Image 1 (cartoon, rainbow, N blue to C red):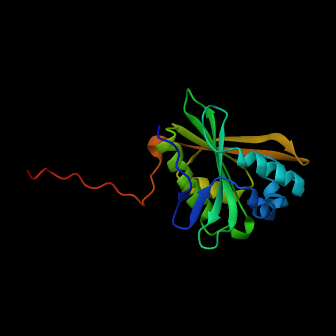
Image 2: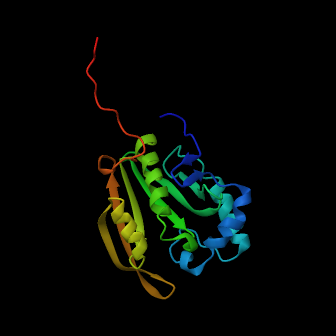
Image 3: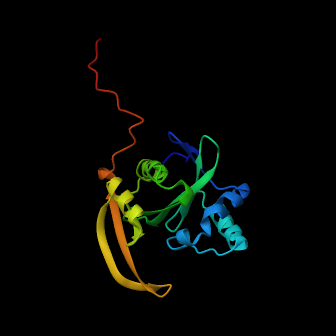
Length: 198
């Protein structure tokens, strides 16, 4: 495996590691109740967001199972932090990875999550040679479910009323895609095979 080269550029986004100066951008969305419903680590106030930022600043590579790579999603035009994506290496033997993502609701519905996740899938399958990527979604998060389907992921499990969350039964859906199923980025096209002239 070659060394990881960051940042990653897409048409509209830059995916890079988190920096100290990202506190304001992270604070703008991470503690929102609509975001807290679905995030992996809960935050309520600025000090907890600062703690979360410090943790994410340490998620810079995948060296062994259990490691997480977390990348800030920055809009290229104005350098605004609009969310983050993460790849968690869950199992080395079976080549399993989990993706997680958050987009500031102010920027939802503009295709940013799909663009960022597409780049993360390319990284997972092409660079880290992960065999299967999966994602979890709350059963009520219809936007996330639709996005997983648009990315070509298949629904593999639906856990009904498996946990209580804030006094309500939680429904959790698991989606997955294999390396051979992923449609690589269309930005780089393979050249057609040419017959030798000489």
